[in-house]
Length: 82
View (cartoon, rainbow, N blue to C red):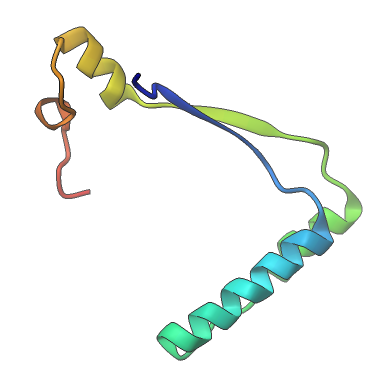
């Protein structure tokens, strides 16, 4: 099989988002020695309420693999150093 797209939903629970931010901050502190802080503006917005949201990201490079009839993604990658 070949994955052509990636679907996702957005996290809109402010308490869960804060827990995840804080867990990320602990890891960043241990690895890099500093943290950038928690995005309080986003958390405030989530407190006011955010409706369920989601999206889908189409992998154009993978679609090009099909059109080019190649077994590997390498021949269709435009920006290799990205």
